[in-house]
Image (cartoon, rainbow, N blue to C red):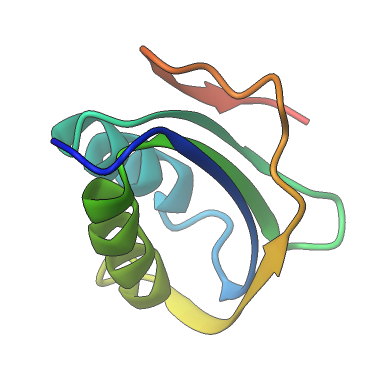
Length: 95
């Protein structure tokens, strides 16, 4: 992919815990060749940090806003990107 290397952060709210959301995010990120990490937060939301080419990030955000079939994404808020976001792997982290 082309378009430079950018980092983005997201806070996802809705029914996004206990429905395979983190694994969905990891699968999409890997499929698009992006690096990043995703974790559940105590308030029931999910935090996502991703890094890669602009085109891949656009497709990633579209998928993030939809989520897997068992989820319900109510709100996706852009948050400051984590500068430590990995470039070559996508990790599911525990809180």
